[in-house]
Image (tube, rainbow, N blue to C red; front, side):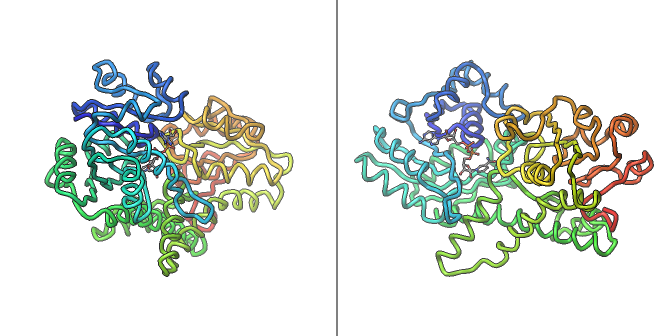
Length: 436
Ligand SMILES: NC(=O)c1ccc[n+]([C@@H]2O[C@H](COP(=O)([O-])OP(=O)(O)OC[C@H]3O[C@@H](n4cnc5c(N)ncnc54)[C@H](O)[C@@H]3O)[C@@H](O)[C@H]2O)c1
């Protein structure tokens, strides 16, 4: 098939590349000329393990190309994916304007039957909106399909190639067949393609993110209780997750969830619910717990140092909102750095891949360094914010010798408390008991 993908961000670039890898001809479109130029020159605008190699191979084999022009890319295509951003609007709702602009541009360029696929995360009813916008500008036959994306940044290729499931909302048999053919190489009996109506498909995406966010906030609330009661949240997590009705993923207490999706999608779903006359009380609590959680580590620092951080310097490990990505959208590190600076401290931070992204966001605030031990040098405390593998087993002796005051604030519960204490550190974590 000939496929176009509109929007070449985390989702669009991975989608386009994986379909090219399965043998289709794909043109990726982005309105950002710098991004397209970089991609054409063999560069990759984001950090995503395995992506660069896949992009290069498919470009070389002429199955994958990049352009800024939807008008040039769309004619003759069988399927056109819309994978542009849906950022939060003023009232928390998803801003559909990028999706509708992309839909209109696709509609204007159609030269024959095409399946237009909403891959962006969009509120219930958006497929109807997209259909209306396209119908206004073309007489060509087309179908609109909702196909939300569930990939995780950091494991995006694997998630796309081996999805737990593919959700497809369709309203016509013709579109259903096209989508079944397209995803055939990626689905198995136990990893099925699930066809449903478009509204249910749109809601499934929000339901999934809201559920995952709820699990995280639930565990963070449980961690707060553990701190007060002298229990260990990691023991509780193991006991809880081993119950097959519950399972282990997304039960880690920490500094709160970040990223471009959970916060935005929880807020958008609350707005959708409110607009339909339902107060989604549970999600309000999920969001409130998360906001509190992002500030918790700084509160622990302030408590340790008696309320003032003036004249103190802190090392910070990890800036990206999670490991294996350079994405810093809604990253807890941003709230933590703001809190430390606001209390009069200086911050020296290190992240294995997010330095460039961080430099633009943190200009004139935190100092960024290339080496984790340089971040700890002369520090009054070290905060672990993102659990990159390389931070899991630090050289305690070296760290102890470098730091001015040996205090650790483990925002991800990854360090061995007894080892850290044996090496002479005061150790705080999230929900690991009264001293944590
Ligand atoms: N990032 C994730 O992990 C993830 C996972 C699942 C779903 N989603 C959803 O997928 C969508 C895209 O997310 P993302 O993280 O890839 O976004 P992104 O911000 O990384 O990329 C969006 C891209 O679209 C481009 N764009 C905007 N308008 C355009 C237009 N009219 N024509 C061509 N290009 C245009 C932008 O320049 C940008 O490069 C969102 O709705 C998001 O909620 C994201």
